Image 1 (cartoon, one colour):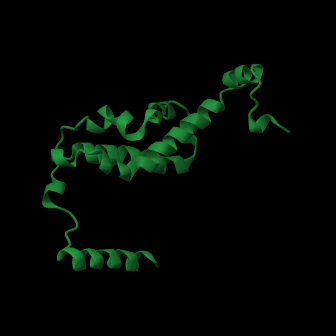
Image 2: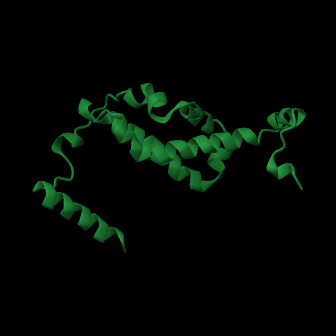
Image 3: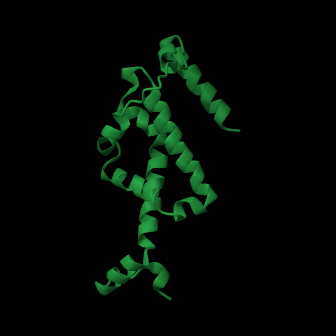
Length: 137
C-alpha cells in the first residue's frame, strides 16, 4: 500500500526537477545471444573476495533441499544472464550489479553455512578449540 505513493512521489519529484521522466531507454532493451563476461571477470571488484564462495554454494545438496533457496538461485542466474545479454556496452558497469547483490550474498552465506555443516571440518575445528553453536548443550 505504501509503494505506489513512493513511486509516484519519486517520479513527480524527478519530473518537477528535470522537466521529464523516462523509465526505460530504448537502448536498454537490445539483447544479444553473445553474453558478455563483464560481470564474471569483474566479480571480485564488484562483490569482493566473497564471490569465490558463490560457485561453492551450488556444489552442496543442501542448497537445493530448501525451496526458499530457489528464489535466490533464480534471481542470481536470471539477473546475471539478463545483464550479460545486454548489447549496449554502456550498461556494463558495476552499478547495475546492485540489482542482484542480495542474491550473491545470500548464496555466499549459504555456502558458508553448508561448509560449516561438514563433519570433517567440525572435528578439525574442535581440535583447535572452536565449537559450533549446535554442539553446545
